[in-house]
Image 1 (cartoon, rainbow, N blue to C red):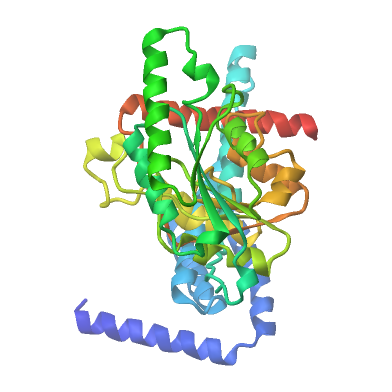
Image 2 (image 1 turned 180 degrees about the vertical axis):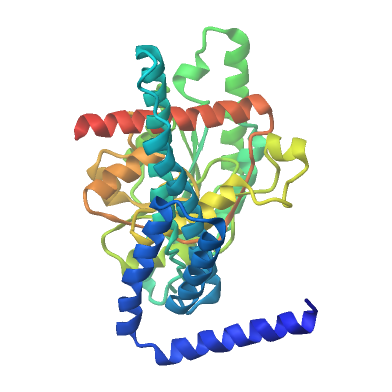
Length: 410
């Protein structure tokens, strides 16, 4: 088929689509929704020739274009429908044709365990597809009056990271475009606690003292609204470090930055306004973006060529969660309202993923969250494969702990 004929066919389809959009009322669209849903279910549960399935999906695709006026959005939803269809069709076949309960207890148990694992995967797929149907795109809210500029404490937790990395983040933080008397930056040095400075190993003790002194000298040299905080003992890791700093500060909001997350100059001006508009808001989370490849991207040579797993989460999943006011706290590049955080005793520390646990705890009290999708920090991926595996293992461990924790509460 020549290019001109293809273009003519596409033009005709677009005209038909525009015509139907113009003359089909909302009432008729709602009436059409029922038979389309029945057709979708029949395709999942009824064996049909391939050509019938193909024609049926052409009908569903065209109706999707009619129902949803935004063409890009309609194509996304159609792709989700196809993915759900293939998965449910497979699962229908698995349920009624393949479970083996006739060849002894061992084979029956193995068959059921595999089936339950696939059922779990299907449930996760359906939940993910549902969340991805509507993505919320937020615009920043301007700060117009003097009282709109809420006071902010910027926390930069650090443990054993190189001093130069901490310095870079701190300098960027104190340079943010926000009234200087309305925010303070705190380096929370968990590598400079009394416990660390009195380590029984003389080599480690000296390293800790030199690093702690270098950070103190840096803070004294810069001065202004940059401060150094530490504590007696290293209890409850990052959550304990932040909670100790909460006792020593008093800003309305808390901005948490990992020590390798360099913030943009306009970070506060683009995020603080949400807290003025929404009184029940406890969190504004922003994306994590990275200027180095993770070990897998580096070894495969796909950095900035293929979208990363972080893009999937921060460009799609978080926006879908935000539509339901269920955006997650991701530990950094996020602002939290102090008074709501203090209601639950600060950052939670029962699990190793203290950020997700804190978000769930505050959501359970009826407070709202927001996700602002503009990347405004630049961070570092783990640079070694072992560090990458440790990070992912920790995340997986935390998610399992959260499931167990909330099952117990239920």
